[in-house]
Image 1: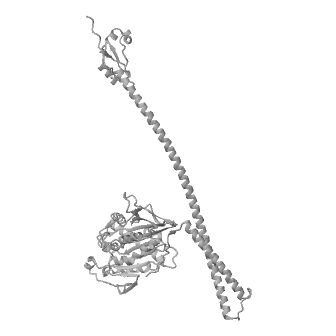
Image 2: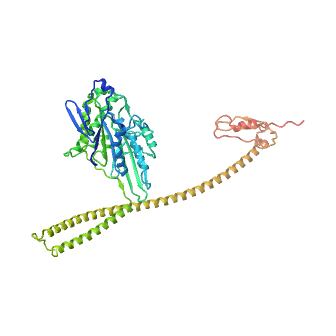
Length: 554
């Protein structure tokens, strides 16, 4: 079993497929024990890993050894990573996802890990509150694409680094889930958007590296402390030999990019395992940048190398085993991602201060015994009683050890006191912000109330004006069109008018006596400021109701 800080490497060998058998492949891999593998290609090469699974191994056996301990680490607040590496068609996607994520027998590490995770949440203490959120991205042609983006606009996301969050993908979609079914549905939706294509080695070859991220945050309701564990489940695209895959066009460009990123991953592992290396090239590829914490950082990492047993792919199998052997030497620095509350830090500070007081009292008592034994602090006689001399030396050693522990406790006490002060200051700032937000909310509510009153007042005025307008319209209608209409006494004719003037209505009487036009019949001038020629609508109405001349007396 690997050390808790080292990368754990597991090798899984699949059975031969039809393509290998058709090309005359024979088995060139032997598994003498469950931790050793032998590759025969122009000689025998032996490798030792944490565990080796043969062609007859099941999905459940692989999960039990690889992923189940990782779920316990996530629940404790550690970061963890499981990723599969190998040539194309070596069984990486089968190991990580399986033929179907809904098949209880054949589903892979990722869906089984999800089930185990929610089972751990359901069995946890009732005083702990959990939130589970997931993200799903792929690294395609050195671009990070968000597989959960419904609008397909997040196609080139950036990788950022934060002192508290560590390495993260900026702007990625995060879906909160409450049960296993919801999480598997999110995963299924993202998998539909992943880039795949058929090649000469694999009908459904992955053309991108996929990274499925699960973040579990737990908060203790009594103490207020929080723990956060991040799980990265990575399915790498396989390295390709063009002469075997027969890739061309776009698939050839994809293969070049895949091989380039995997080469960058190999360079990072070489730098991490080389004591003389002064620089680790994480930034040479998006893949190595995303996996920066997983390789040499704050994470517990498991690498699953998938290999073929056939002599047709013996060189690729040997290269994969060498990659895993180098990765096994990487040492990570995992730590619990925990934030204590002010109350917890205060209690720890008080406990440390009590321990310091007890150690000081013990030191004083030992110093008193030492002075008594040496004759009031005088030098110790070298040739004296050996038993007394050894006891004095033991007491001196104990005093020195306790003094060192006391210094460490004081340093830790000072550090925790600083944390308490910082958290207290942050709490005061947040309380001030909450107070200001409350004042702004009150002011906004007051403005809303004033605005509502003004709106109601304006609505009332508008209603009154509408009523008055209707009354005026009714009066105007009655004046214009009375109920009992007498025939008008004159008949009018239209007289021609100059341009830009409205037509004038003239009666026969007005024509006979032009000097008394307006007096004799009260003819009205109708005009339209917008009409330049012809008759306006008002003039037409006047024509329709033209006055008739009175009949002559008999």
